[in-house]
Length: 138
Image (cartoon, rainbow, N blue to C red; front, side, top):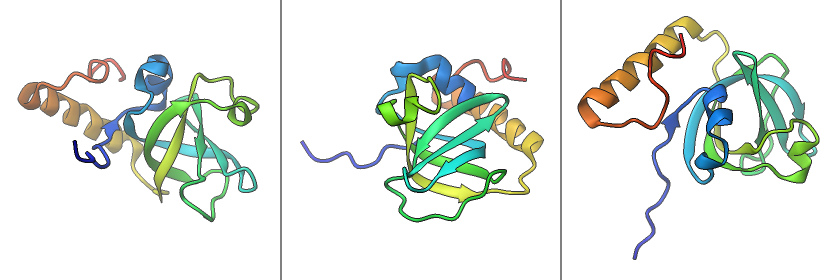
């Protein structure tokens, strides 16, 4: 068996990641969130979107410049929360980031609409049902 490589990421919201918890461990995800805490010494950030928060490990990224308030798009794999991350948020899971992109200025209403239409397309044409009903978030 060959190496499958990096899997395509699922577009989710932080709330959905927390609701699905350990069922997503090992799954690649993509989401947006605003930085509310950053500790470069521990390679950890906390991001928030729609009042849901998740800890993100930046250990695979290396040195990055972030500020509280930055809006980010994050891509990586869900893993069980480690002891360090549980000091910041009592969540079952965390993200180990592979890619972090600053998206300050993004139109969030348009982004949420994009996610809704993308899910409808995937459900209708690809038969994918990995997230909640596309209309239930709005």
